[in-house]
Amino acid sequence: MNIDFLLQQRLVCVAVIDRPDDAVPLAQALLAGGLNCIEVTFRTAGAAEAIARIRKARPDAIVGAGTLLTADHVNKAVAAGAQFGVSPGLSEAVSRAAHDAKLPLFPGVITPSEIMRALDLGWQHLKFFPAEAFGGVNALKALAGPFGHTGVKFIPTGGITAANLPNYLALPQVAAVGGSWMAEKKLIAEKNWPKITALTAEAMKVIAAAKA
Image (tube, rainbow, N blue to C red; front, side):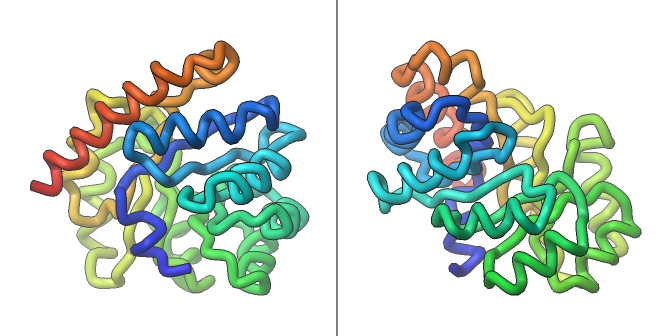
């Protein structure tokens, strides 16, 4: 799938879903708020099933698999129907599995050396994680110097909130932003779908303003 299409809304909801039964209601809440892109992290036993359920029930959603730490994770994500993959770091085994499966992958990087290695492995859209802990917007501005001409784009994730979202969206090297504030575990556990929809709608307004 085309990367630009995957990230066209410039926001990815990073969700930890403990119960697969919550997967479709969560996707519906996000879609109601105007967001179609969700990353289901492989931090729970039900992650693959959650992805499969969303893909079946809501084909209008774009569903990826996050926290891919091994080649086995990649294979399970692909089998579940994931349309993209995200890893917190840079693993050659994960990279090979994603290339073999033709799965778009956003490997995690934080240093210039990791960015160079990711480019060598054939990836241009990179997760910048953990963003706020490692310099945030200022770090990304600095990295634009040596890497701006390479076509590399970043998806900063980690510590991003509705308050600092505009600062990241203003950077031309930021393709999209990953965040969990609109669908935190507590909100999912409480099945507070209206609150998730409201927070998502607020974020989409910020994105619309950034595009204007």
